[in-house]
Length: 171
Image (cartoon, rainbow, N blue to C red; front, side, top):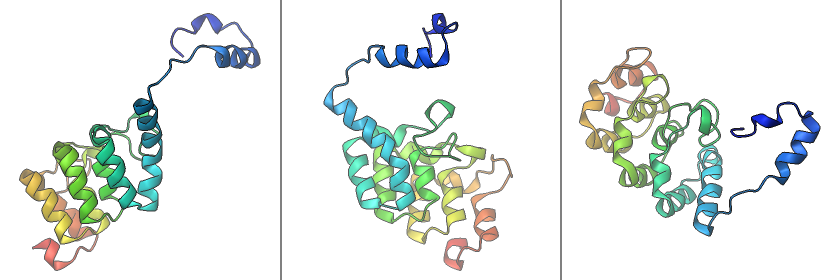
């Protein structure tokens, strides 16, 4: 904890008591609610609760611009390092409506390389997303179909073939 180096000599048990008593900055109601929403995001994805996800993103659109990293690993859950909300949703059999809500909140997420250098389109192809979802992602960022700057140097088309995408996706 920054600024707490002076506690290095204190026993672990005593340090816990001191830290509990350390003043906590008060949050306004909106910030507190956003923090709660941020903490629920990975659960909503896991449960595929897209209706609630759309409501949360509608109320807190900045969540669509946040990414998961070492400092913020609980935001999107394990295995999401570097990913944005759109990446994680694309991995989990989303509906077109939730994809549209995320694109409205942050269409630039389609251009962002997440974990392993994958774009949301790569993840959508892995997860067997519908043609409508693939079309929405490609419409937002047409160059994504020719992006292979990922760890395995695969185009989204290669991934779609590898994971058994339907013919309409491959066309």
